[in-house]
Image 1 (cartoon, rainbow, N blue to C red):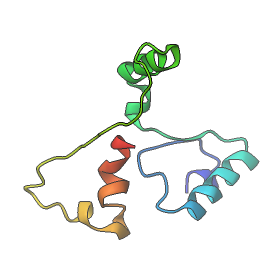
Image 2: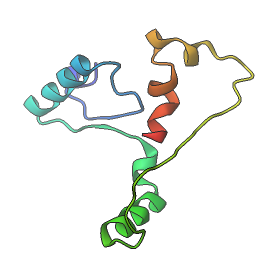
Image 3: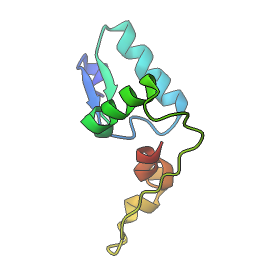
Length: 99
């Protein structure tokens, strides 16, 4: 809706729930010279920038595998978190942090 009304967009995750929708948003932004970005906070977290610098310099040695887990106690059983139609689920909601 924002792009259709010529507004720049900084969007919380997930920006779209499928590739077709994301591509449509991207093409609209490009054709209208609009800013479009998914605002994943961890992308800008200072520690990740430092780790990237270490990796590029070889400070960490050869990285052959990474083991990541992320979780939380869903004691409230928030329905949206479990409904893929509402962008819930392991990948769209919290899995992106591991990716």
